[in-house]
Length: 95
Image (cartoon, rainbow, N blue to C red; front, side, top):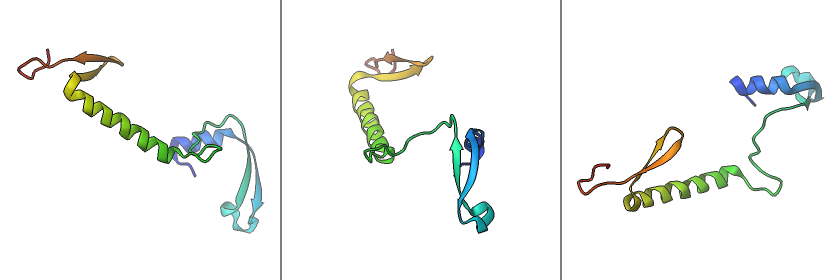
């Protein structure tokens, strides 16, 4: 199921649609679609790895590492699409 912009992209990729089952349900029937150039994100790969499990774990590790390193290495500020390292002086202010 897709809504908004995603629904628009899906609709543009459908080349052919055919009722596969439960024709009597009209719009609620199950359809088979012939798709071309449909942008997708794969959430579960062919070996069963789910981004819904690996993603949160990966980002939790990155966020934890970032916060652990802040107190030792100073602050990192996102500036113009890149990172610029800034250190604290003895007063606690950025130098």
